[in-house]
Structures are given as structure tokens and as C-alpha cells.
Length: 453
Image 1 (tube, one colour):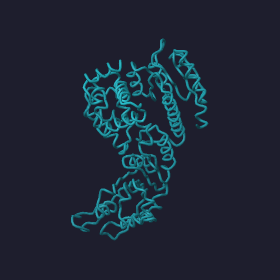
Image 2: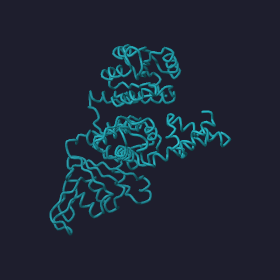
Image 3: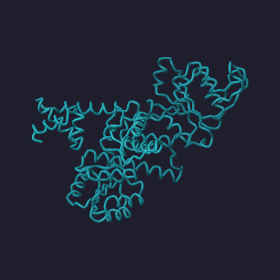
Image 4: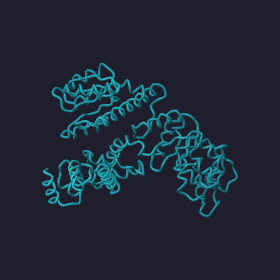
């Protein structure tokens, strides 16, 4: 734990003295400072007078309830992470609070490991907000469409903030679907070239002959179908930024021509003799390991080092699972509006499925899953039933593995554990539990009678 987290200051708001005492005792053992408030009114006053790193607040309180206190605190200190504590009966309130800016919600009885993680994430969130506020006083806040609160992405955004105002060529690496294009857009938007064009080219989408014409332009009559002169993407990006996506897919011959433009800032159109001067910043992206491609002779070493002045790695979604809830919220709003659907909230079970999935397709796969879910959902709640089968099957597989890892010796006890845990997951809904277990409701009822349940 960093020194910064050791000095974390938490305001605990709960009208139950025993619960406050228990939480504060635990926080102090973790090395954090804890301040108590017994109702919402006291909490609002405390936030107005003092500085805290996070607020942990109960929903149901006698004087001013947690929802009203949250609204007042958020209006006063929008950067301050507020974590809502709630019983299952008030989960709807907590979800509504999340939609209006609360950092997270936890159900009682509290899972202390999750509580600690939520508070540490809250500190990271506050640190990012403070960093942006600080930049706003000097360099200006980072302009970006990247939706994130995780530490890996926070560090990436900070790096972008340093690199964007420079003229350095940037190589963005990462798996497909992680958001490399968004990183390129952020670099351009925060550069001194932001008023000039950002021109994008997918190098993998075009044959070599077409890619050359696309990048450098061509003269009239230079090949069949060239009925007029055409300016290439480098000229279109003059004064601005050219984003070369999937640069690793280019041929050796094309790599030579790209190297010349990067070194000399000049080019010739296909079929032309005139040399054109251009002023372009190049940002390239790849899902390949170009270092290995260089070693294998598939990518030119000189071009690699010309592109690799600064490397920015975009981590896969499985390494930044903290981002899943806010990405889900973002995509739900986006696709609900696009498809003219009303989504009241995402059920906790659905969110659990999404958070426990490995996301081989990264953010792009998550985006597609949410769009599909909204199109197929029934009613006004997004549930796990609308998710792609691949996500549902992985959750079922993980659940089965968990059962087997902790299974008792006898088949009777194993069956009993699976049935009771499935009932717990469905919150006592026997029809749904029977469906998941692949048995009839009557069979389930008979087995429960046998277990004296």
C-alpha cells in the first residue's frame, strides 16, 4: 500500500453507532483515518468544512437519508467519491445514485475485501480528478472520450497528457478492441495541431497498390481508373495528424516509402514527379509485437525505431476490470438512446456476469454485448438473459468450477450445495433456479423437502 493510501481519510455516515464503530476500527487497522457522522445533515456539514478522500454512506437514515445527502455532497464536491451502503431492498436507490455520479454501491452485509477495493478505487478516482483540475490551472484539462477509472488507464492518460503537446511520433500498441483509435484521437485533440485535421487510415483494409494511392495520392492517368488527380492522406493531414492503424500489416516496399516521408517530410504522388513537402505528425497503432516482427525480418528496423519514439500500451479489458461498470453505464445510455429504449437499470446479476467475463474482444466486445442486450431485452431492465451466450456460458462454467473446487465428498452434499447456491443467486426464485439447474420446478421442490429447506 502506498503512503498516499495510508493517509486516506474516510467519512463514514450511518445512524447505527455499532456499525460506524466497527467500520472505523477496521479502517484504522488498515492505516486509514476515519471520521464518523450519524446522519446526512451532519455529513453534508462535515464535507463543507473539511477535506475527505471518500465518503461511505448508508441509504436509510432517520434525519436526512443517504440519497439526499449524496445529492448535496455531489453538488458541492463532484470530485469526491461517494460509496453507497444499502440493503437489497434499496438497491434501486443505489443504482439511481450511480447514474447520478456516485462512485459505487455495496450491499449489506458488507464484503470487506470489496469494500477495501472500492475505497482504493475511490482514491484513484479522486487523484485523477485532482490531476485534471491541476492541469486546468496551467495546461488545461485533458480532452478525451476515453471512459475509465482504473489505475492502468489513469496512468495511460497521464502519459498522454505529457506526450500530446510534443511533436513526437507515437506508436500505440495493444490487443484488438482496446481503444487504440481513441488514444490517437486524444493525442491529437490535446496537441498543438488540434485545429488541423486528424486523418485516419486502416493499413490492413487496403491492398498495397490501393494503400500507396490512398496515402500519397496519384496523378491523372497513373493507372486504370485514375481519371483525375487525387490528393493523398498525407497531404490532407498537412499541418495536422495522420493516424496509421494496423501499421504492422504494411509490406516491406510500403515501409520504405513511409520511412522516407517520416525522415524527409516529403513525398511524390503515384505516377508523379513533383516532390511535395508536408508537415504531418504520425501516430501509428498495431496489435502485433513489432519488436518480434523486426527480429523475424518482417518489419523494417529503421522504420520501427522511427515510429517508436514514444510507445503507449493500451491494456486489455481483463487487466482493468474496474472499468467494466462505468463502460456498461456509458454503453447502456448510448444504445438506449440510439434504439429508443428505456433502461431503468442493469440488474446486479447481469453486472456480475459482465464483470466476471474475460473479454477476449476487449471494449469492442463489451460494446457489442450491451447493444445486443438492449435490443433483445424485455421490459425496462437489462438482465443476464439478454447477454450473448458466450458470456452466460463462461459464468456457468466458472460457477461449476467453484462448486467442484469446494465440493464435499458425497454426491448428495455436492448436489445440495449446487441447488442451495443457485437458489441464493436467484434470490429464492425457484422457477429460475430450476431452469438454471436443468430440472423441473417439481423436482427442485422435492429435493428441497429432502434437504428440510
